[in-house]
Length: 140
Image (cartoon, rainbow, N blue to C red; front, side, top):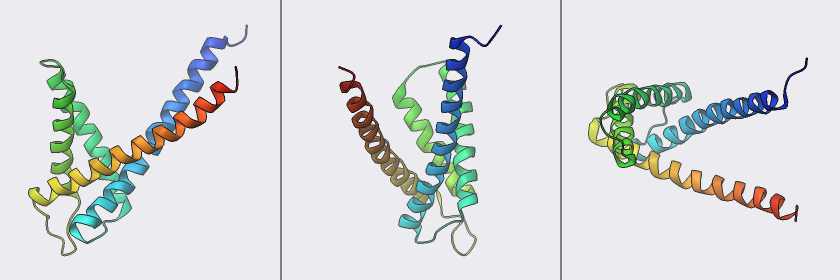
């Protein structure tokens, strides 16, 4: 009795999802640090940005889970992501003097973060489409 083909494919798929989550969090922390630098003029430590990204993901998951029981909307999910991210940025990423940057600047940081993230996602998606599209066209 060996491992079935479907079990092996499922395990490889789960491993790929795990790698994408880890790379996404690491890249998200780098983008958040750059966004903070662009808006505030001070580069936070990478570990604080990493913690902010992880805490934002956890907070968004919890709030979306609660709101998802009532209403299902992608626009609402985007708004929740924006607001939770701004709150986390305001509390975790401090200015150069150690004070909070304020909710207004945190909203601007989160807006720049989301714009850079969307542009990066489009670029990465285009690259993957080109690579896998070329691979699929080579099969015919």
